[in-house]
Image 1 (cartoon, rainbow, N blue to C red):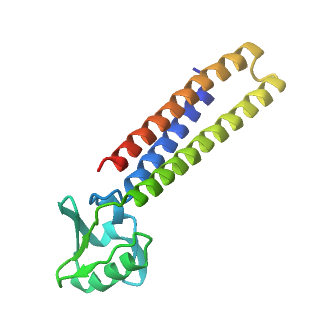
Image 2: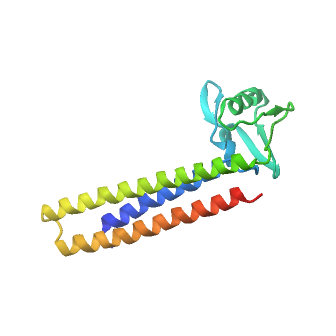
Image 3: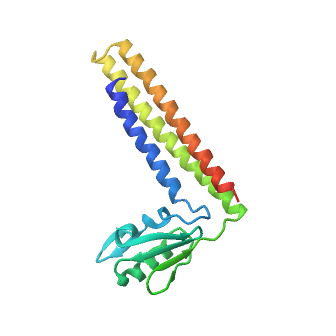
Amino acid sequence: MHPLVQKTQVELQKVIEHLTDEYSKLQIGRASAAMVEHLMVEAYGAMQPVKAVASVMVPDGHTLQIQPWDRSMLAAVEKAIRDSDLNLNPSNNGIAVMLNIPPLTEERRRDLVKVVGRIAEESKIAVRNKRHDLIADLKRMEHDKQIGEDEQNKAEKDLQEVVDKMNSDIEAQARKKEEIIMTV
């Protein structure tokens, strides 16, 4: 495999990791620490993610418990959750912030499936852009006589195999996430 194709394969793997991360942030009716870990909290004069200032626990499938290491951070964590797009109402018990995750309605499930599709399409576009950039680089290298036509064609073929695998991984993750969302 051509070194540029290998480099692109590593970059495309990051697209898949980003997709997985985005899917983990979706609220699908079950509590998950990933839902809140990325939220930014004002702590000691700087913005920090929740996971840097508190421990996030899942006591049961519908509850999240966010316990700051410094109790003075409770109000800041609560504010960050209220200001987020989670649409959840936090409750502060003086020790931790509790979040009850309501079960999803059918309408919300359909909306989430659309979001899953949008995220998958954005990932496919990123893969397509990487493919386009590498093909342009290979053509430029062939034009500048840095590589031969046979090497360019083999690299493009290898690249297409990598792209096809990445796209099938994206589609498989999207189908799996949609199935999880639509399961009542």
